Image (cartoon, rainbow, N blue to C red; front, side, top):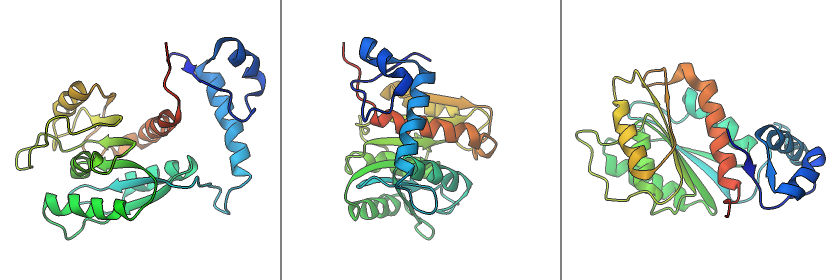
Length: 227
């Protein structure tokens, strides 16, 4: 991986990397992770009794798949990551909602009750729902796991439907949603795509997905590099 480019030193917790940052404006990946750990320790001083902290007006909203539930293994694991990164967490319960339109409307209704930045996370059909709702909700980013895109029976998405950063995770052995669908979507939107040796559930890759999601959330907070 290349260096992380930072525009400013932040709150002075860079310590051993501070002189390098002042000199070059660049931190190596290892230096950035050490800086992040130091900064997190300061934030955790204000943490609640569960060891998590919250920054105002930041939400990660999860959407489960067709036959899943709001607190399955993937969502529970990634919700802990989101809380650690300072986000409040919501997970929409779509059980009993049989239509795609109904699920999109439910996500829109839940998110419109929240005041602040939104990051949408969707698995399988929840991925389709998250993509469809991202633009109307002005989402900061979308994290997709085996998203049910370009599937027969689902309504077509409008052209250039996504206008925020996205990252996609898919299993090479997915027998429900072909990984080629995510390749097509990633190519169309120039989105990072991680193809893993797993199936549609991705349960045997939770540790990897956890780190990918953490990296995604951190990336949303990094300033864009300028030339």
